[in-house]
Image (cartoon, rainbow, N blue to C red; front, side, top):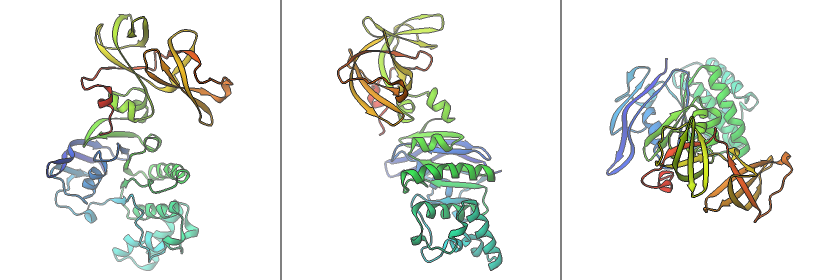
Length: 361
């Protein structure tokens, strides 16, 4: 059972804290994505799990065993690097069979291993090709096949799709999820791409400045984030500042400015509390009443229009209009915007301010 457990795991470089005191458990057969902006410590974290980087403090447990002093080759992991790392002088089959060759297996076993794993990634017809004869997507599939051929039930993926073209990334992320679930592997996948994390993960662990902000399923982090940073980093959100005016049964009425209110369903905040409302663009609608606004731009997105508007209080609001709606909004047009009270999320207003709270640094 390849459970991964991190206890107070951290890495410092002089006075710089790359990762600070991370506690995390990744369950057997779980696909967990470590997500966050560049420089947040996610790659340092996965490399400490692998044994590439020695922690400054804390422990890594794999399958219940303390990994202190255990080198990467003895940790029983498959590892796929950000930069496609194939042996240029070996063809696809030889690259995939490398681990069995290193263990002294005969050529028949090596060929069988290569065939089985290249078939898994649908590259059996590329067995004899060298890395420089394959596309970037094909090379990364070979790298994945080589990691799977190690026989490990724990797979570590360090930004495995970042060097690929957008269309190839989309295709390969589905392959990653399909393969690893079919093989019953435990996966730790590092990425800065929110859409990639949402697509492949059972659970997302969001990092910022060397620490974990929050962890949960893609649905939880998107629909009910516990932190403003999460609401901003995963997907897109509109933020409105105000204060709680009153609570009526299950409704909380937020005053944005004098005479302008928004209702939110459910909240533990009390009248007078300063708050921030987070609401996704798909949950804002043009209506006959609501926040008086003026259209500032209209962007064609293929299946919908992304409309940008500015409220009377100078808040910027984005909302989406399906192409099938047939309505075109003109720059400068006056409209009213209504917020879906069931989909809006309410946060206490941070002391440091909204901009600082959602900053990527």
